[in-house]
Image (cartoon, rainbow, N blue to C red):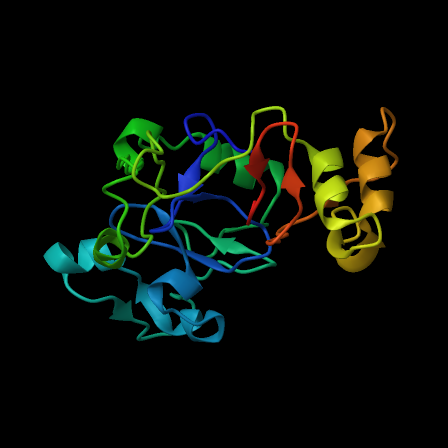
Amino acid sequence: MFSMASVPVYCLCRLPYDVTRFMIECDICQDWFHGSCVAVEEDKATEIDLYHCPNCQLTHGPSVMRKRRGSSKQADGAAVGVRDPNHLVKTGSPQFVRELRSRTFPSADEVLLKPSGAQLTVEFLEEHSFSVPVMVLRRDGLGMTLPPASFCVSDVEHYIGSDKEIDVIDVSRQCDLKMRLSDFTEYYNSPNRDRVLNVISLEFSETSYDNSCGKAINKV
């Protein structure tokens, strides 16, 4: 889990840097933006001379398209354009990381929306369209029943069955695989893990009633 107060975030989505996603730098505010978030296709970035992000377009007008060879600005999986168009910094290199870390960014308090459970309505989400992270401070009004704080992976296996097949990502190899839930639970509880496996999403419902805590565990 990232701590948004300490990890640099970028773009309109305010997410940490991801080497797998194409980004482009705004020549006005000097923030970096995912092409998919600002409707800039990677193969079209070479046609842009001065890029203006959506916020800067309001005061500086639209981006300036390239008029001559060699004045393009691009950030992709191989190189990131900096102020000097003839100077390229490789994505993920020490210099690239140093330049990113030298930037200052808003604190989490400036970025996060913090509605109460009652305020988190469909209308609220439509208005803000997930453009910034949302943290619900109080669950009252959400209409959700949460499991106890002690609820763990072993409890998930207990409620939905050891033979349940789940989708898992092998982080180091960046590949998907399927595992029985009992095998993942054994891996998760192991003190010595020889690889990093992530279950991105697992939704389940209509499980058995838990007499020990007097609650039905649904859609956890």
